[in-house]
Length: 110
Image 1 (tube, rainbow, N blue to C red):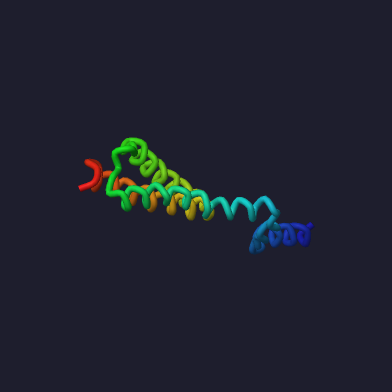
Image 2: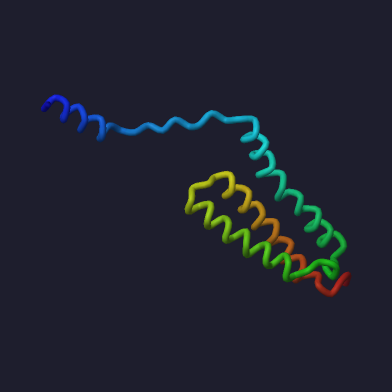
C-alpha cells in the first residue's frame, strides 16, 4: 500500500510535457489566410495615398475596424492564440495607416 501511494504521488507531480498537435492541411491553409487576409486591405491604403483622396471612404467604418482589431489583439494575447495575434496586429497596423490617410486627405486632392 505504501509503495502504491508513493508511485501515485510521483505520477501526480511529474513534469508534464506537452507535445504539439500534428498539423493538418487545414492548419496550413489557416496560416496562409492569417497572413494573406489583412494584406487585402493594402489596396485601400495605397489608393488613398496615391490619389490623395479619401472622400469615397468611410472614416467611421475604418476607425471601428481599427478599434475592433485592437480588441482582438488583446484577446488573442490573453488567450495565447499566436495566429490571431499575428493577423490582428497586421489588421491594426494597416487600418491605422488607412485612418491616417483618411484624416490627411479627407478633402480630396490638394
